[in-house]
Image 1 (spheres, rainbow over the protein chains, first blue to last red):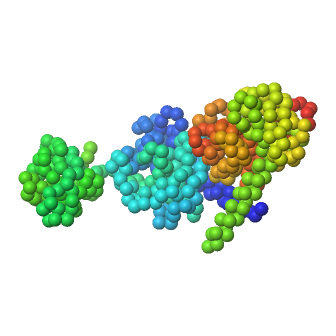
Image 2 (image 1 turned 120 degrees about the vertical axis):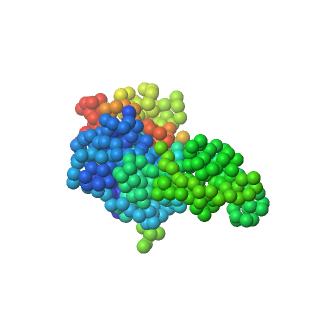
Image 3 (image 1 turned 180 degrees about the vertical axis):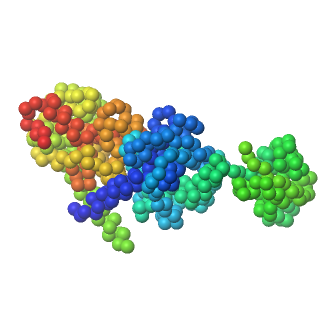
Length: 298
Length: 204
């Protein structure tokens, strides 16, 4: 027998041991606590939103065994990310790994600290994809699915790449029965927003809509097959103020085609709040231009 | 990168560990349920299994060479879910005992048994954690090894070995489809010490 299996096993255990310095226990719900990752040396912690069920009386178990209080900085239920702050200093901050280094088939470890000690499960990267939208409407920059077992309390913990860096934050709360990881690039976008605003700001039009097929002449004119039919328009909301009405079909916003609801959500990022967009609608068989000022979703 | 050669070496080692573990594996039939597993202890004639696998005074065992034998159930501890059996001779030196308490999370381990009656079925995965404070511990306070591998009915009583083929635990139960729980080898030693005072069971 060679020594490769022993070497592999020992390398994995050592990777877990060294990463344990960045992994904390998050006590914010009844039952099994969740896991969190140190984000900054001065006590910012990133975790999974769904393991933080309450807004106060939060506790964090640090790698050195200290148990300290933490406050909720903000949460983004759409990407299942929450940020906490604990008053501590000199904490060990992990190295995040760009998702471009990840390949399907790579061995990865999921770490959790539901108890006193760090625990680990092993798997492979099952699927890698492009940007996707969670069922709650959040944008995750890259799809990263593994077959690691999400042992109780593992949500909010890191996915450790074979290169030693952290690929992202594991969540079992985004999709039932599938182990998904929120990649570092998304955390690097969401965490600063939560630190600044306490929430991820999203634009708002005040419409309910569903995709519909456009008439043939409009299809050939616009080069898109569908738009979204307004099923409801909130009185006094941004769309109503712009003059949109029930039965209109929205086909573009600021020049970007609107084919389905994902296109609407994509056009309403936090940076669009307060800005006025060119909206094109189909009403009574004719295309019309309107100006709509994007509100903020409360 | 010499990946194919490296992977072949990993596979070769896995096969060697599996073969070694199977040399310490027996099948246990108590005539009530399907076959369970048993682990040959280092002493001549002793086999360790789960209490829930050996429910009678005598059980039938199938030894590694294919020989059948009737084993006498010496003692049973339902709390620790352990039982010790004796056969006249099992003709196997047993597995080299290791240490569960030195296992580190992320380390690789392998379990062999008879899942759903498949003889010598092998599964491998990583150590999740060791100790008494594991989440979803069905017996709070009881020391266990949690492993991310697929234990199935029939694995119960079989050996859990580390990458050097040393016995670190006795497979006992599932905690979900992909998490197995094993009884640490140290707990087995304590059990043998408690139940077999002055016996040949060497309790090092």
